[in-house]
Amino acid sequence: RHPCGAPMLSSEEMHDVYGGDQEEAEAAEQTARMSPELDRAPKEMTPSHEATPSGSMMQMPGDDLGGTGELNPQSLAFEEISVGNQAQGPTPSSSTSRLGDSTNTPFLGGDGGMPKGQSFQGAGGASSIDASASGAANIWQLAYYKPLFDVDSHHILTRTIHALLPRPRAQFFEVISPNPDLYGPFWIATTLIFVIAVTGNLAKWMAFKPSEVEKKWSYDFTKLTGASTLVYMYVTLAPLAVWGVLRYMQASKRFVDMLCVYGYSLASFVPISLLCVIPSGALRWILLLCGCAVSAAFVITNVYTHLQDCFPYSDSDSMKRGYMLLAGMGAMHVLFSLLLKLLFFA
Amino acid sequence: VGQAPPAALAISWPSPPAMDAGIGSGAGSRPVGMMLESTIDEPVVETIMRDVRMVGNKMKCVMDPRKVDVSTLKDWDLWGPLILCLLLATILSVSAPPAQKSLVFTSVFVIVWCGSGVVTVNALLLGGTLSFFQSICVLGYCIFPLTVASVFCVTIGSVIGFWIRLVVVAFCFVWASTASVGFLSALVPENRRALAAYPVFLFYLSISWMVLVQ
Image (spheres, helix red, strand yellow):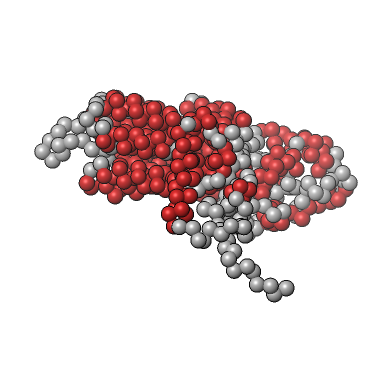
């Protein structure tokens, strides 16, 4: 699916849909190839009036569909297709089949927590109705979250390595798109909390000199609670903010994807915190700077790549807003690293 | 039809309510319902000792992880973990700085219960076929070595140097982790064992750390 909302069909399906209209199919294929498929959310609630170049290509006049007898009514949802409703084609069955029963989870269905069925797309409404009709788990059941933990050990390893080695043309969203997970973000955040609490106290112990007030060093448990507040809040609120802004800019991404990116970006802070035990002020600043740079680079390059794919003609207005978003993200990250340094490794 | 039930018959509930869905639990070993002998006439000591013996059995089971008898652990109960958690929290709280006593007590409680809950939910989400309370029971019982370590650290360890305390706590940590990882890994798909085992290590590591620095 095109990241900005238009569904992407395989060339086979495109031939089906366009009923053998060779040129139109080829043109659509071309647009599809221009932007890599980043978002696997066939039921994403993207407003239909976003200016995507492929939007007009995907618009299918009603009689085209009526002409072809090969369309499978189960895989294509006819009721969503109307002339005025562009950028919302039939729900591609190939992409949904890969998600399997994860389509029942609105997280992966691109709902991102927004109220269902109240936006422009009929497809969104249809998918949520389907989900509940098929008896999918509701939000209070564990099974609802199971698709978010559909990873093996080597997946986690690859994703963490991706996060530790950011590269200019970032591909993290493609790496996680078939099965984004919450295992990585949650346990990396928890590990970071534990490491910060331990090394923060160790750092204080090494710098301790008995004085009048405090004759003996004692462990400071408030570091644990402070660290957990800071890290957990950052790793949930920052993705929420970025996700909200991206939606506003009509370049939306699923909320789990943002959570994944931010969660894995914390991975670089873990070895940094371990090394910060060394009682040298300058070294600590340098280490924090490196950690902040690596994780900020990871997050920013990924979102930048995504924005570039959404606005490939560098529509100056949207790109300006994009740069502002990236600057804001960088600032939040720097603030987070500063707080880490000042609160735990002063 | 209107026949009154025999008056002397009492329903004796086995001590863990067999509530977990899944593996055939306490219901298999002790049928709930009308038992042929009534336990309502037994002395109170006997009733209490039955539970104490059960808790003791499980602790013995944990003490020797190589001979884990799965059937013993299937009858989960939360008395053992509660006793161990209270003991650990009290010891750590007593040896904490005065301003943080209640914080330490709370933290230990929260870490033990919420931690085991989170580790269990994590294993379930990864596709594990374990029962929720049974897993919490095992994780709670496996805190036993760390409780022993904390008693040691408070009594003898305060005169012995730091390094011996470190060795003792490390040994107890390894003991606790291997006991529970053995139980958990068997019930999680092969390619995700590491993912399920890591939180267990983190859990016991955080408790060991708290024991070490008291």
